[in-house]
Image (cartoon, rainbow, N blue to C red):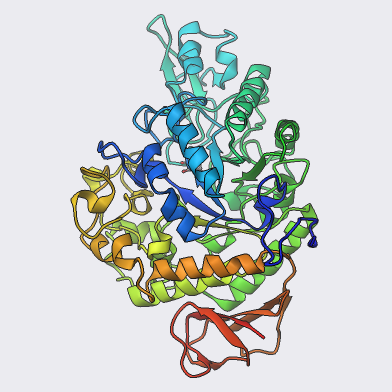
Length: 560
Ligand code: GLC
């Protein structure tokens, strides 16, 4: 049978996986932050052998693909998003052989692998940056990055007012080989992450080499980090842009730093590389752009898919969900892509915590108070998180899940200042704690050193409550969040064949109800009182039902 996207399906609607060029359209993708997933060698950092050892766990979870955050050699100034060598494995995480073994094990379990590619900046320890520093002003080596002279008679002021995403100026001054204070280089993130000059043919060529390197090793797709920042307007005088807030980025494609129209020329070129493979390699853009600018990244001539982060900023609110879903399905249809759905990732406060705080709460400030004020309503947070997860799993498109959400993990909000690793902490002069609270190594067992994360400690301190959330506690326990995810992901396969969704209007005000092909109904109660469920067989619910009624903060899937 062939579905609306031309994909071959078997009788249960499952895509024929191997060789299917459309495998990504409806995939459930599980994000692994490798340093915090599983540590096989006991150095406190998760590693690739740790991932391989957990392939049976991933297979039992029922995901279609793994997205691996950076595992490349890196001084870890930004959790590995500062890459010193794009075509190797960080020795602390393993070797290329370990990578191949992990890929084979995933593929043998019918799980695809997507790797993170970080093209906006490298590490300041990348050989080409070291070469640029040594080669001096005006050298071809400097031209691979973005070096400029400073302003003022002695060049002591940065070339523009641009600011780093992590706080402070986006320019850092270097010392020239002569020992004199010298030029400045651009870094939209930490100072250890110099931005590449994408006007330079060698930079372009080198990334194509990297895409082929991993594709040749069997990688199925790429997640493209900060995909909207590669093309920059560096014409003099540099334009003023004193803030990085995305609402200040105009939608005309002419901002000096972000989402410029020329960036798509780069991805058109990458698409040619992806299409050299059979099936073509997939890609998903991390592009923090206004909704109407997203289809360009997601077009089949470009990366093919783009993240929609709208739900990361939305409260657990019926109206917000309905609007976001409608807009994104429309946009995806406009670009020929499928939608993406994300509730948590390695950059944001975990959704079980977010939904337990008052709507619209400032999460940065809340973290500064160690998560004590206001207190999280953990029960409501987890109830809503499960309801939201079941809702997005019923939607057409791919769902990106973040490691640990299947255990119902909350943000670790009270990490001691001394343990913080995120560059945001230092760059904001300790005004924001950053993202470590969602990156704490996973609890696999309720006892033992580092809760089974590894044979020894963990690189971020794990809280005592991890004991109750551990995999071995939840495994086989019918009402656990882990078993709930497993059941939902299994059932989702029956829904995956088709991309249509019809709203069932006429339900109660606080209820969101849609129908998928095959008579699948997904109903979420965002309100405060129980609502009657329509007739049908309940296939799964995110919490207990009460005699034909859907309680508040609960989602159910029915078939009729
Ligand atoms: C992306 C990553 C984030 C990283 C940043 C700089 O937003 O998701 O973790 O810090 O890019 O590479």
